[in-house]
Length: 490
Image (tube, rainbow, N blue to C red):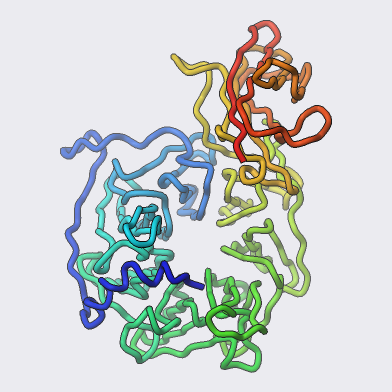
């Protein structure tokens, strides 16, 4: 699963570290503005429209995003966010675990390297014991942060466990001050030569530690002293593929089922019988069942006996233990006239009221009734406030083949606000000011507020427009006409 470029950088440094058992870290604590260190208060709003994970602690929802950590304590009506200014690491949130007493967050960012170009790097970890009021930052464990992103975090007793590609499986027993490398087998730590040392997912369930690597699922009953490995090649009824992207535990009526998002490692093993999908076990990993062949799954959520799978291809649900599956249809917020413009979902959770929350490449969505109705939460810059414009387009530049993909089409949003009940029209013009497309005409907006219209980058004949500069005019009845510029660049 890893390219030659990934192998080149970072492992020269890692070889010098292979024999080391632990690394000491310098911890820094951050407090909000009324405390001595004068860190700023949380930022209002959802941090980003790229949602990677969702967790609940009582009635508080925590959302991991590509630009920081967000939370809401009023059922999503308002949001506040934390980033590096508050004690989190640099970049977006790559891992999140929340309990009643502590929150651990890991971050990641892209970095430009001399020999291998842009590569991911770990921004370290941060934890809070007071619901985000103060944060303590832990530098990324290991000899280098490059190719050493923390993908998952688990808490087992007083130990913190993390996983990464270059750093492997690591454990801290002193709140992040020091970290031990704990390979999930009996071999010397060697992520270059041993696929089982490239760790990606970890959970702790009923005192049992489960670790997903590039060579299967590993189970330890004794806090990491001894291990059993389950992979596609060593079982009669195995997981679908050896690259274990995510693990989750479903508890229902006294039974625990282990779920894994499993991807093929054919390029590494040569075994063409591996395939991507989901795998699950009801007997502590001794046998596995598989489903959703060809689906690239990222995460799981559970509603009693039902399971929800987050995947590149959408949201899937099974109510009969994985025998049959249905896919959620279009996600549309009728109250706000918002459409979810992506099939990619990375995280989901079920709140104490039984409602499903799901997030991915286009924000956060919630359904209280199994997908019949939705509410969409999205990050955006408000229009018409202070010196901000009344309208803007995003993303800008816009690529119809890469941005906001839905049903094979890409979409750009035109954000605006209204101050009274009104009707709106939106038209696109080329550089010669010739009409290219009419997006909406006389659309009712009966309630003042923030709105967005979408365009698929096609002209009035249904043809993709050429690359170039375009202008748009938004007419708000009773308020005026507002112009903006859009660059189309494929």
